[in-house]
Structure formats: structure tokens, C-alpha cells
Amino acid sequence: MKKTIIFFSAAMLALTASVSVNAQEQPAPAPQPQKVQITPYGFVRNFLTFDNRSMYTVCGSDYNNMPFDEDFALPVNQREQYGDVDINEIPTMQFHALSTRFGLRLSGPDILGAKSTGRVEADFAGFGNNNTVLRLRLAWVDLNWNGRHAIRVGQDWHPLSGEIMPDALGFAAGAPFRAHSRTPQFRYMYTTPSGFGAQAHLLYQYQFLTNGPEGASEKYANRALIPEVFVGLNYRAGGVYAQVGADVLTIRPRVTANIPATATEPAHNVKVNDQLTSVSPTIYFQYVEGLFSVKLRSTYAQNTAHVNQISGYGISAINPDVSQEYTPLRSSVSYLNFAYGKKYKANLFFGFMKNLGTAEDLVAAPANGIPYTLYLKNNTISNVDYMWRIAPSVSYNLTHFNVGIEYELTSVNYGDKTKMKADATFNSEDCHTVNGQRICLLVKYNF
Image 1: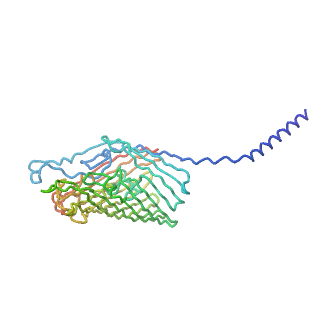
Image 2: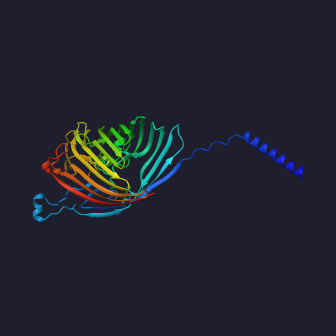
């Protein structure tokens, strides 16, 4: 028995040694490819809004731009006698969950020595008869080399909008005093260890468009062949972030023009090379200390209707060869935002826009009720002298739940369309003020 136990023990030791030797001789298993990690996120967001009059809104009326001008059927000298009313002075209330959002954060393997990340995001505030169409918001991929060099390709926020926004509760988040656009782009960012950086964007229009002779379309920018360009310098240190930059947009409003019939030739079309280039410089500043933050952006905006601002361009000359010259509508657009708190948060938003007129006088050509041809945001608002907004709000915020209320007062100084000057401005005596008030209640569940 003792010999049997000794025999089996020796056999087990020999077998173990053999397995160990064979294991050492086997090649190591090939490394498994790193997979893309996907993290879902989003929220269910509800807005209940009350407006004291008809507003220029989009996205099921959740996104508020400004109050519409007065609309009387009778001339001024007859209203008191016959009791005419402003048909836009009608209060409304609506409730929607269209801005409910979901997205995916992507983190993947290193590519060309760079950390790869991505984002896909959508909501239900898209385009359709009932405004409940699934809408692509963000879709981009990042390659980042040690925080120094970064390339982003895909659809992201326009640099005039910025990824850092005011803390206003309303769906418009400060627009149209804050530029608002997401657009396909190529972006390069360089950051130094000292906090200084530079950025350059090549941008293309898709959802937010320039207007023109054929309506709102991306074709005016696309057929110029030159992408929209934004370049900027920035600085970040502690609670300070500052940026200075400029956006350059080139468009071709027309590629053909009609030659009227003459006694010797029939009417026919000819090719033209109509073109307009506009430059919009901007500055941004942000300071954060504890629970307090202040944000400021100011832009000298030229032809910025494609970022949802009250802007555009007009015809300044008609040449003998029937080609046309164009001039941008200019404006000063700024906002200032103060916020304090986290769980209990108070916010105060100020916005101001002033119409500075066109760079050159317009050619007299009546269109859309005005004495000149202007191509503006949706061609709906053509007679703004200046406008401002104040919007205080308070909110209660938990990790997965937010509730808040905001009051917006948007005041617009409208000019008499028929008395527009050749540079698209108005005399003060030809203007009147229209105030739009909105109360917005927000209920939001985050996941």
C-alpha cells in the first residue's frame, strides 16, 4: 500500500512538471482587439409655456425667438374710430415633450496613436407637419493626441454657438441673442500646457440654412465651393475661459440669370458668378468660481441667418451683364448670463441686438412689403431696429430630476417697413415697441 501511494505521488509530480513545461512552450494568446464602449444618456424633458401674444417660434412653439410685430387691418388714422385690433395680441399656452433627447457616448481604441471618442445624439424636435420627427443633433468622432492636438469630424455645434451655453431654462437657450446651429464640420484644436490654444473649423450647412432667391437652402454655400471657415484663439486657466475668433461665410446666391426678350433675341438664361463673402468677428468670456458663473458673448454679425439670428443680405447693385452685387446686413449681438447655485439655482439672462444696417445701400426693388430686396431668416422679420431680452429663472436640480420656472420679456423696436432706408435701418420716429412675455415651466428626468 505504501509503495502504491509513493508511485501515484511520483506520477502526479511528473504529470504536473510536464504540463508546466508544455504551458511554458505554448505561445501567449493573441491580444483581443479593444472594443468600443457605449454609454447611453439622455432625458425626458417637458415644457409648459404661456405667451401673452403671438411669437415667432419653431419646434412646436417651444423655441421662442421674439414677438411678432403688430398686425392691424386698418391704417393708424382709422383705428381709434373703428376700433381695429392687433390680431397678434392673442395669448396662447402649449405643452410639449418634443425636446426629449437620447444619445450615445463612444470611447474606442487608440487610432494612429490618438484616443478615439465619439457622440451620437437625437431628439424629436425635427421637421414635419406635427413637429415630432426624429432629428439628428450630434454625430462626430474625435481623435485626441495627449490633450495637445485634437481632430473632430462630423456634426457638432457651430463655433459661433459654442459648446458652453447660457443657463437659461427655455428651449432656445438665449437665441437669437446667442447663435444657434449644429452643422457638419472638420475641426482642429491645439492646446498648450499653459492654457493657450487655437482652433480652426471648416463648416457646411445642413439643418440651419442661408436664405436666397430660391428660399432657404444649403446650395448657396455649397456651390461657392469654399467652406465656411472659423478660426479662433482661446485661453483656459482655473475658472477663466476666453476666446476671440472670426467666422467667414461665402455664398453664391445665383448661378444663372434671365435676359429679357428684345426685338432681335428671345428671352434666355445666362450664367453669372454672383458671390458674397461676409466676416463675423466674435469674443467670448466665462468665469466660474464655486457656485457662481458669468458668461458673455458679443458678435459683430454679418449675414448670420444660418445660425438662427435676425440677419441676412440684400442686392446692392445690378451690373450691365445682369450679374448682381450683394451686401450683408450687419448687427451687434450680445448676451450676458449670471448664475448661482447647483441644487437650488438662480439664473439671470440679458440679451441685446442692434440692427447696424447694410454695408452698402440697397437697390430699390420692392419685395415682401418693403422697398428693397432682402434675404433674411425665413424672410419673416425684415424691420427690426433693435431688440432686447431679460429672462430670470429659478430651478431645483437633482442628479436625475430638474424642475424650474423662467420668465422671459423680449422687447422689439420695430420700424415701419414702408419707410425703411436704403441701408435697411429706420428713423426713430418711424419705430414702435412690441413686448412679448413668456412664462416657461420645465420638468425634466435625466438618465
